[in-house]
Image (cartoon, rainbow, N blue to C red; front, side):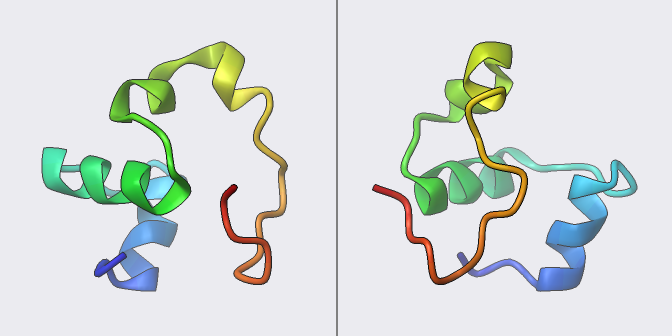
Length: 57
C-alpha cells in the first residue's frame, strides 16, 4: 500500500489524520471505492481480524 505500518496503526486508533491520498491507497488495497470506507453498513461486514494471508476478493 505504500504507507508505513506504524502510520496505519495510528490511523486505526484515531491518533493520526488521514489524507485523501492515504484514504485512496487504503481503499485500493482492500478493493473498494473510497466512499465504502465511510459506509456504516459496509464497515459492519468487515472481519475484525484481517491478516495478510487473506487478500481481498
